[in-house]
Amino acid sequence: MNQPDPRALPPRDADGAATFAEPWQAKAFALVVHLHDRGAFTWPEWTATLARHTSGAVPYFQAWVRALEEVLADRGLVEPGKVEDVTEAWQRAAEATPHGQPILLGNDRSRG
Image (tube, rainbow, N blue to C red; front, top):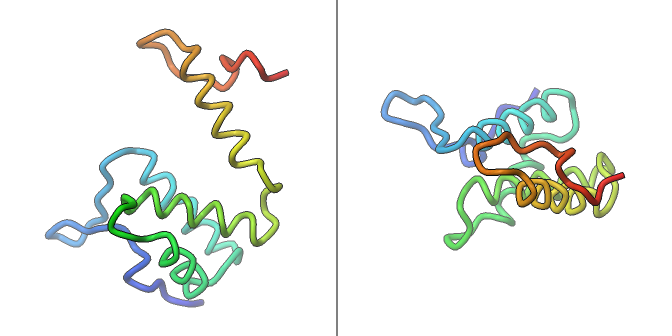
């Protein structure tokens, strides 16, 4: 199995442990690793895709998520437009959720 390109790995602390500023970043990282382990793509493919989304203007894990969306679409693992639809549904759910309450996709009143 291919070894990951170090450029496609998350930032590390002085001890070499991955650092994540938010829980969603760790989840996005874990999802990419899981999909790779399941054979959805190789590390060179992932690195090339991630590189297309990485620039000084885009936060690292935002680029990570954009690259993940591209890989999912390119591989036919998600329907075209589905990522955007679900993202918008979560945003509507967040806006409909009272402060201090958990955000639940069911709070999106436009969903069936």
